[in-house]
Each structure stands twice: as structure tokens, then as C-alpha cells.
Length: 109
Length: 130
Image (cartoon, rainbow over all chains, first blue to last red):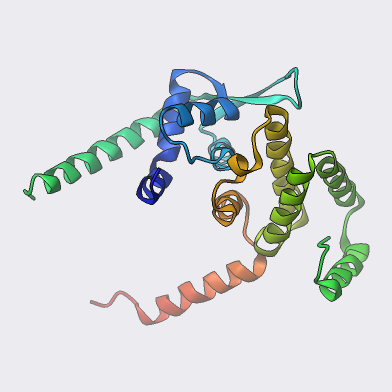
């Protein structure tokens, strides 16, 4: 994955993770694994974890500690009402950006 | 609290803690240290290096600092349990990971003072008269 993708991903990772959690609850490792499967191979587990801490602090997700057979309990994240609202806003912003960029590419403005 | 090459500062800090540090904080810090010692060697080395960097740039208050270190230990324990290679935990650029992680906690006092100073300096001269 090139430097450009890494840079662009920085601004959108929050929305991507919220969108994943809108589908189903997940713990950090599952989210990272999913992202890697989707081709974001350079994504660090620590980066995703830092982001999960942030969205938890901002009250966008509910967190449940689930015992694990191997190692410490896992924190399972699920999107709450506030998170859903935030995700909608993210998609509106994304659409705006994507439209403008598409216009630029087509040479209009 | 800090260990390593910065001896005079570390001793000063220890002295300060004798006077001001609540026993509960010390207990939590010792507990955190004990957790890091249980980690695989490469993880242990990495978390010590991250801690050193984060103590420098991170929160100035003991409580926020401890929350940050405990969150870091959570990550490393989980990743060790999953068998994630160290490089996949901290990424290609560990500084970038450290900065990303630090964003979640209040910043150090000296750095926030400098940021405030910069903001104020610009505010004074760019007083939006256009």
C-alpha cells in the first residue's frame, strides 16, 4: 500500500471503523483483520486500537468486556445512537468530497 | 518514574513523588510495570521505548498518565495473546503510532503552554481587521 493511501486513510479511518461497527459488533483484532483482508495491508493494530479508544471516549460506541480463552478479556465495541448519527454525518461529508473530486477529474468546476 | 539515561531528572522526579505522589498512583504504576514484565521480550522492549517517548510528550498529570499506560498495556497484552507480530502492532513508523495514541490523552504541560503561546501571539497581530 502506497504512502498516498496511508495518508488518505488517516482522515477516513474513523468513518470506516464506525461503518464496520454499524454492521455488527466487533473487537479490535477483528476490525484490523477485516481491514487487512480488504487490502489495507499496512494498517497497524495499534492505530486501530488508538482510534477505538478515541471513539469510546467520545461516546460513539458502547463497550462490553467479554472473557477470552486465550489472554485478557476482549473489549467488544458496538455502535450506539450517537455513533449512528456521527456516521451519517461522515457519509454526508464523504459524498460532498467525492462529488467535488469527481467534478475536478472531469475538468469542470 | 522515568528510567534510563536521564538520571538527574529521574531522581528529581522520584523526590517530587515522595512529597506529592499519592500511594494509589504508585501502586498502579508498579502494577503496570509488572504487566509489562510478563510480555514477550520484544514486546517488553517496545513498550518501554514507547513509554519513554510518551512520558516526554504525554499527560503531565499522574492520573491521565496512568490511564494512558494502562491502555497501552491492554493493547500489548491483547496483541501478545493473538500472536500478532510486533511490527503489525506498532506499524512501519512507531513515532506515528505513538503520536496517534497520544492524541487521546491530555498533552504535557510544557507543550500545551507553548501551543497556547503560539496561538496567542498570532491572535494579537491577526486581529481580524480586514
